[in-house]
Image (cartoon, rainbow, N blue to C red; front, side, top):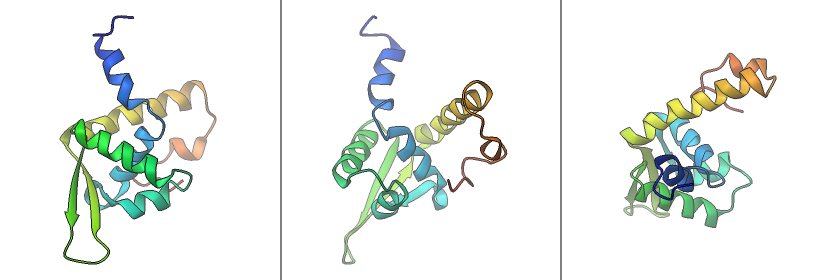
Length: 119
């Protein structure tokens, strides 16, 4: 495959383990925003190190924006989807609909909007 292929270049960072799930969990937060601790709680099997790495990568790609409130203890880090990140939600929905059609029999999931899904 051509190293400069758009799909190849995009897949390199979007298909890293946890990346799409992190984006989806941020989307589910109020105003498409989540604190680091909320993400860690929602993705209970992810390590803090990997979560931090993925968030840093997503920030570098312009998919999330990080804000830090150092006026309180503990310091509060929040992550919000950018316009680019919000557009990725359509890609995630597309994956969901494809899976429901071709691979996974999950009728309750098919009846839910991803933002409201708490599974």
